[in-house]
Length: 628
Image (cartoon, rainbow, N blue to C red; front, side, top):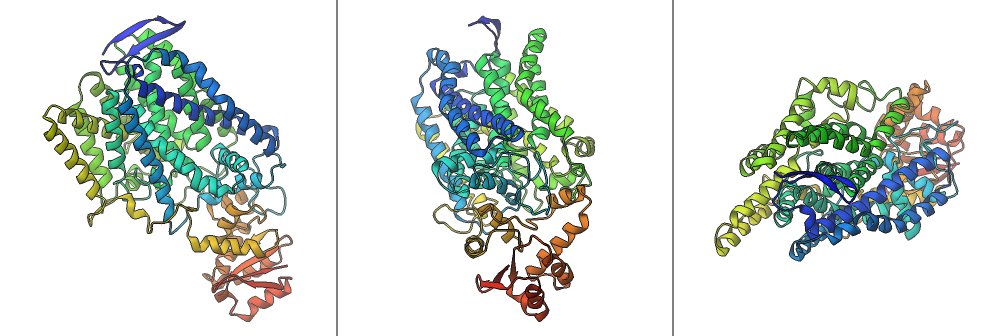
C-alpha cells in the first residue's frame, strides 16, 4: 500500500491505494462516481427539503416545484465537484463501462420482473404509502407529520418517522405529480427500474476500491448472481434486493450500505471535497430512505473507521484529522438522530407493540438471516469469507479481515446483542445489523479474484472456466432444492403494482362506488384502499402502529375494539359482533365493507340499518359495501 501525504488543489490529499493504479484514473470509475453523486445528492437535497417542508408547513405544490428546481440544478453541482477529476483521467476503459451498462440494464429488468407476480402485499406499505398519497391528491395541503389515513375523531396522530411516509416516499410523490401518474405507478413501476440499475453500480463502486475496474465489474456481476440465490427467507440478501427494491429500507440495505462503505473508504483515501460531498450525500439520502438508518449506519461507520485505521500506515495524526472531516459528513445523520430521540414515541422500545413479535436474543435474530432448512446464506457467507481472505493479500486482506472481525466482536455476537437490542436498535431492527457484515464485498472480491486467476491460463481454458461458473450459477435457480428468489414470484406478465390483482380490483371497485369518508374494512382491503385514495381514512389499516398511537392517548381499548370489528367484517370472528355493533355508532363512520358470510345473521343487517347504513352495493361474490 502506498501512503502519500501532501497538498493538492488546496485540499489535504491522503492517498491510501489498495490497487497499483488509482481507481479514479479510470473513466468508468469517475462516471460511476458522478452518477452516484448526482442521484444521492438529489435524494439528500430532497430529504432536507422534505423535513424543512414538514416543519414549516409549506404546501405540497410549493414543495414539489422546489424539488423540481433542485433536480434541474443538480447537474451543475456535479460539474462543480467533478469537472477537474475528468481532466485527470488517464485510463480509458470503454469495454468495462459497456459491460457495466449491460449489467445495470439487467438490474432494471430484474427489479421490474419481480413486480409481475405478487400473491401478497407487504403490510408495511399500509403505513409508508398513504401519507404521500394524501399530499399528492391534496397538493394545496400543508406538509406536516400528521397521520392522515387513520380516523381519530379528533386531532390526527403525529409521527415523525415511525410507520409513516418519509422523504423516500415523498420524492416519488413529486415524480408522480410532474409525470401526471398515480402514486403507485411511480412507486411500483418507475422507481424499481431506476433503483434496480443502481444495485450493480453501487457494488461495482465498492469493489473497485480494492481491485482494478475490469475485475470489479466481474465481481459485481458475480455478486448479483450469488445474491439472487439467497432467497430462503423474507429477510435474506436475495429477498432484500431486486424483488423489493421499491421499499426505502431495501434501497438502504442493497444500495446504501455498499455505497456508504465505498464512500467511507474513499474519504480516508483522498479527503477530497468530492469524496466528502459523496459521503454526506449518501448518508443524508439514507436518512431519507428509512428511519433504521439511525441504528445501522453508526455501527457500520464504526467498523469501517476501525478497518481504515488498521491500514492507515501509522499516520495517525493525519488519520485523526481525516476522521474529523469524515465525522462532519455524518452531520445530518447525527442531528436527525438527536431530534428523533427527543421526539421518540413513548412506546417503541423492547416492549412496544411494534416489537412484540421479535426475539430479544442474538440467536433469535440470526434465525431470520440463516434458515435451518436451507442454509444457503450461511454457507455463502462462510465460503466467501474464507475464499476472499485466501485469495487477497496485503492491505486488502487486512482491511477485509478487520471489517469482518470488528463487526462480529462489536455487534454480532450473543454477548452484546441483548444490550444493543435494548438500547440501540430495538427488537424489530437488530437483525438488520447482519447487513453490516461485508458479504457483498467478500463475494465481489471472490468473483474478481477467480476471474483474475482464470486469466493466467490460455484463452480457451479461461473461457471454459468462466462459462462453467456462470452455467452452474444459472442452473442453480432451477434445481429442486434451490433457494433462488425467482421462486418468490408465481407468474410472468407485464410489470404491475406489487399486490394481488384481485385485491387491487376489489379496492378500486370499492372506491368507485363509496362516498368519501371514514371507512371500516377488513384486512388487507383497508390498507390497499388507503394506498390508492386519500378520501377514505380507515378505522384500522393494520395493528402495531395503531396500538402505539392510540395507546399514547390512553385509548388502547378503542383500537382493540376496532381491530376486533375489522376481523368481524372479514368474516373471521363472529364473537366480535358487539365491537362491530358499537363501532357502527361511531359518529364519523361513513362506510362499511363486509364479507357476505358475516351478513347471514339477520342481526348484522339490522345493526347496519339502525345506524343509517341503508345504501348497499355488491362488490364481488364475497363482499358488500354499505354506506350512509
